[in-house]
Amino acid sequence: MNEYEEKKYAIIEKLEKGESTRKEAAFELDISLRQIDRLRDIYHKEGKDGFIHKGRGKESHRKI
Image (tube, rainbow, N blue to C red; front, side, top):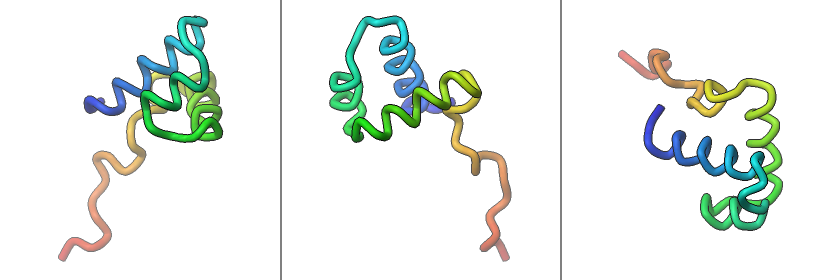
């Protein structure tokens, strides 16, 4: 995981533990409350692996 993915995971984890609010998490990540809800769903369904970008490790379709 890169630094930003780790940060997203840590903030959502704090949110789930009740240590912060949705608004605080949205402010820290500079995203909307709706996006926070989406990240919470990913946290519950996929865990830490869900925060890794899905294109990582795949070859570019534009490669010559």
